Length: 99
Image (cartoon, rainbow, N blue to C red; front, side):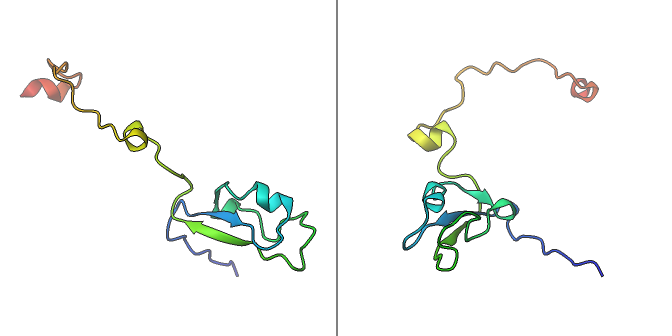
């Protein structure tokens, strides 16, 4: 019988690795990187020298993206509408000329 996979609640759900205790160098190097949940490496990491005592955990996010991405989000500057409307004339669709 085929196993049903549950759909994630968030399609872009992501995780990052939070090194705790005496974490290995790999975990420390990956702490700032976000992974889509289904692509995240398993904990303990493959080459972790402390596999038996690893205390690293995942931190969950609704989205893989981190921080502001657009200029107005980064700098707080809102770009206004242009003072002069440059759009004009008829559109390219046949229906645009039927007004």
